[in-house]
Image (cartoon, rainbow, N blue to C red):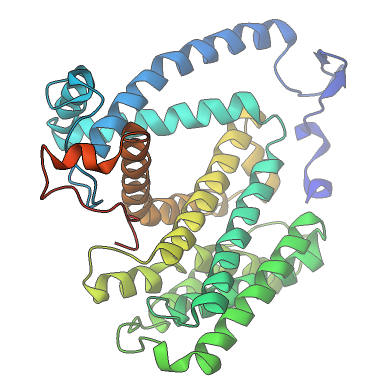
Length: 373
């Protein structure tokens, strides 16, 4: 892909110790004075956004968690029902949805700024995203091997995952053949093993009636969209470019059957390992989306010079955003329950449960995991 970028659009960054400079005549990265100005401004923005993000997170965590913790307050009134921390959390939680949405966007912006400051090579975000995806599939392998049950898993999501991974692996061999090829191969092998276990070894526990999403509803539109909107790089064959676009579109909607299974089971609590798997997919999508956003901001048109002109650059970004938003709701509840569990575990650590029984004996329940409870 790098060879397809016109020479006039190539950005060259030379690192000499701690000095950054551009080659003469090259459309490079910002000069050193601008970089010195941009760094403190970004740090100031991060410092302003992080407190808002923390307050917003505390307010979201305060809403109705189903973890069985005692409600007494051994830490004193500062952390009790009338304490300042709970007052701030309660205030945030009372805010209308538009205000909470703005706070959520500020949290995302703060995360992007933090990534921008910490991760200098943006391609590492793509590697991290694929690693998170592999870690999520590895969690499924652990679940199937240990629990010997596939209840709550969607076979159709695994089949869609194997499909777009196979197509992407083909494109990787044809176009780049690098570390992404290794990660895609490992993820595809583990995904095929998960499909085999669900179809044959653990077939009795497969919830087929709940996994009722029609695959043709996503495969056919993705194929038609790929035929019409795909990269315009002429150095690659037409079918290769269509296959590339198809795997991008299919990946964006591959998790829909899994979310449908969760919806059809009609339970409030999702099994922990399944929740970890879906959350890993959400993290992978966020990192991938952050990669494209930061690459384009840094390179001033990186996506357009990389993938050519036309609608394809817009559709590539739109696909990442769509999948990120599909998983955003689940990831929000996952983080909320997890933070609530950790918050209360730290709050009550070192205080025997019997101390609370004298105050609220009926509500002093044993500690248990959020997703297994």
